[in-house]
Image (cartoon, rainbow, N blue to C red; front, side, top):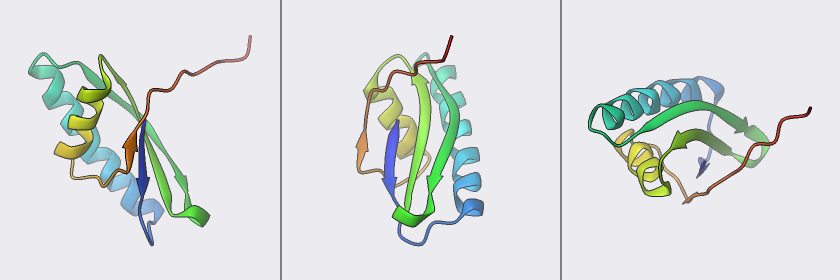
Length: 84
């Protein structure tokens, strides 16, 4: 997950950024560096966007985000737990 502090961020900006990240992930995967963009979460009151990835490493997720031109403060490994 890429945590992006993005002053003044809007839903349309995050949606457009998501398309850039999706294209970046596809390019990375075509180069053998597997990544998939899952989606984003916008927290407008905190001016934060969270970009969610599946990738074979944090480094690849970071590269995908950078290639897409998305400002990120940190890249974190997260584990999703679904209810049974």
